[in-house]
Image (cartoon, rainbow, N blue to C red):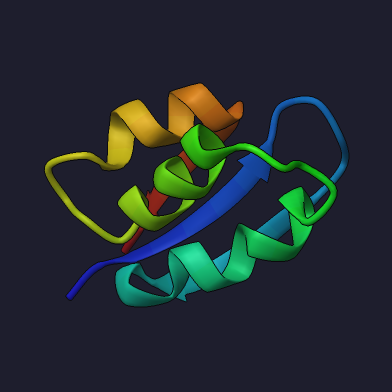
Length: 67
């Protein structure tokens, strides 16, 4: 299992040292004012290794893998 830190490229929000299975839950509150199925899908995709990079790019997030 991998750990990541997440940085929002448009605000000062950040979440550090998260297990990959917790990425979606960590950023969900950041987008609570957005009513878009595409955003909700991208948030869920953060927990899926094959879709993670594309989802993060769509959401404007930078993911940094932590040792």
